[in-house]
Length: 223
Image (tube, rainbow, N blue to C red):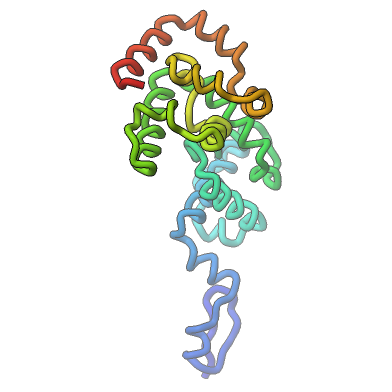
């Protein structure tokens, strides 16, 4: 009597052996519900939906795909960088025809963040930024509205580069402007491409109602 693995069809002489056997196909199914795997599976489906107008594929299609490792690497990357709006990021790399082996590159995410900042609505930008301040407040046990005055410069630079804090907020409150003024020339060179001052100056000039809305919200929050 022999026992056959339902995933790789290898045969074993004892039930105990097949129980501890872990082949690559079985491992993929065992990890099916891991967060990175679910993100990868979602990206896999979005890729075929967007590029080939193919209906939803099942997990077996994904697990057997030659692109499985590439998509799961991307799923882990999304988690590792704590990507903002993961589903939008997935659509971004697909719609911009980025090659799968480049999806995890820093430059791709940086471009995504720049586009997100440019296109994001003022109310969404304020909401997301205040949530970030509240998270900072909980971690450092400081009032959230002291964020711009007390956040460390390395952390502020990280938040700006990773898109955690929006230019809508940074440029429309005095404390945000003071933080920017406190940076050295070297630090400004690091964040300038993410802040894009000339772009935002033009945008604010054409979106005065949104600017006033943002300033009102920030003033009420004491930021």
